[in-house]
Structure formats: C-alpha cells, structure tokens
Image 1 (cartoon, rainbow, N blue to C red):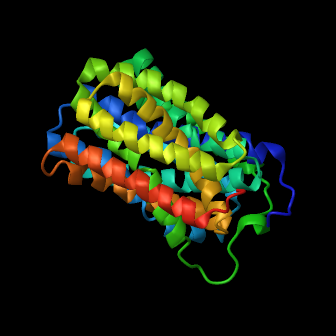
Image 2 (tube, rainbow, N blue to C red):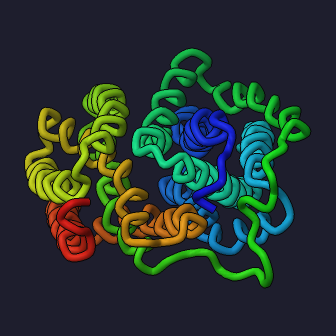
Length: 347
C-alpha cells in the first residue's frame, strides 16, 4: 500500500482540513454551552458523549472502508457533522435528543480523523502528519473565533460545511487502495492504543483548566497556548531523531504538567499545553516506527479517546490538582519508557 502513488492534495490538504473541521464540530458545542442553561451533570454528559462515539471507530471505520473510498468517508463525515450541528441548535431544549446527537458527532469525528491520519501517513511526510494532528489545535482556535464573531449562532454557522456533500461526487480515490478485503474485523492495535492513551493524557487533562483557572485566565491561556501549539505540531516532527525528541518531550511534559497543576500558574501551563499538544504530532510517527499497520492507527487513536471521558471524572475523586499532577507525571514517564524500549536509537 505504501508504494502506491496517491494525488498530493489527498495526502496533504484533505487530511489537515478533515482533522481541523471535525475538531471544530466536536468542540464548538462547548462554546455554545455558555448560552444554554443546563445543569452541571447535563453539561458533563453533553461534553463527554462524543468521546463514547469516537470509541466505536474501530468497528465503524473498517466497515465503511469495505463500502466506499477514504476520500468519500471524509467528505460524508464532515457534511453530516454540519447537519448535526444545525439539528442540535434547534433541539437544545431536549437533552434526551441532544445526547445521542452528540454521540453521533463523536462517531463522525472518529471516521473523519481516522481517514485524515491514514491519508497523512500515506504521504510519508512527518510534517504533514504533524500538521494533520495539529488540526485539533486549529479546530479549537476556529471554534473560539467563530464563537466570538457570531455568539450563540455558532452551531448554525456550521452550515458552511454543507459544501462537502457536493464534493462527494468528485471523490475518485481508488477504493482498492484503502479498502479492507475479506471479512470485516476490528481495526485497532493494542500497542497503538497504549501509546495514544498515554500520549493524549495532557490534552484530556487540559479540559479541567477552565474550571481550575477561572474564565479570564483560561481564555488567555487557551488562546496563547493553542496558537503556539500548532507551531509545535510542525516543528517536533521535523526534528530528525524522533526517539530523542519524544523522550525529551515526555520528560519535560511530565515536569511541567506536575508543576502546572500544583501551582496553577498560567506561565507554566502555557508551555505545558504547547508541548503536551505538540507531542500528539509524534504519536502516529512513533506508532508507525513500531510497524503498526496504517489502517489501525486512526481507529486506535479514537478508541483511546475514552480516556477523554474518564480522566476528568477520575481525577475529580479527591484533590483535583494533586491527582492531575500525579497522573500527568506518571503518564509521561510511562510513555517515555515505552518509547525508549521500542524505538531504535537511530529512529
């Protein structure tokens, strides 16, 4: 598969665009919540529900890959996420309907990002992989910007992405390049799953910072850190020795993360956020270096998203600051140990 030439736009523009817009669709509801009047429990369910949807990607993604090409999956996912946003806007008073809609958003996010990661990996460019994973930061920035411009109409603003339905007919990637022959299986790797679980911990623990820092400090930290982090998504994969880069990044993230949650100082949280998110750009490269099939990387990434639902809940049992600090330190050390053991010195 890796020896097949694929059009440049399909392995560069499409994966970055797919990861960015799908991240925007996943996140924009968080910005909409400030205009709604939900209880704390309902808000938690609405924010966490998509992570449950993402977790079934290892089943849905290989099934769809037997039916259509990878480009069509990306376009369909983005177009349908736009429709769900519009429906959610008119159903905000009915939480019993909203929760399954949010789960469906997570399923589509999983499909779009799995397709994006697989296409980016096919490009064989570490920079493209980094920029694709950087779509998470770009999605946050886009959601914040559109929220600032249109306020509570942010969900309606998603209608601009309905254009992806018109692109479906133009999809002409050879289905045989990416489809799963034979029986449909569950597409994930235990090795990749473990790497993503540990590597994504900083990104998911950062969901707690708005409540810990307060609104004004959280907005300042988010805008600065997420903007800089996209640069880290590009720079880190560009460094030649991925093994050394990953080991050093993991160590620094562990130290900064521990200090961030113990002190709750914005000037410490910013570099922790930048590196903690930037490290995500290295995870698919690390996993590919461990000889994991590219078709299993995206689904494994989305299965690991269950921790995005569980981590905020678990650290909330007891002292949130201390639990967050310890969990971040342990996760970073564990990730570094796995990288040290499994990657060659020259990698």
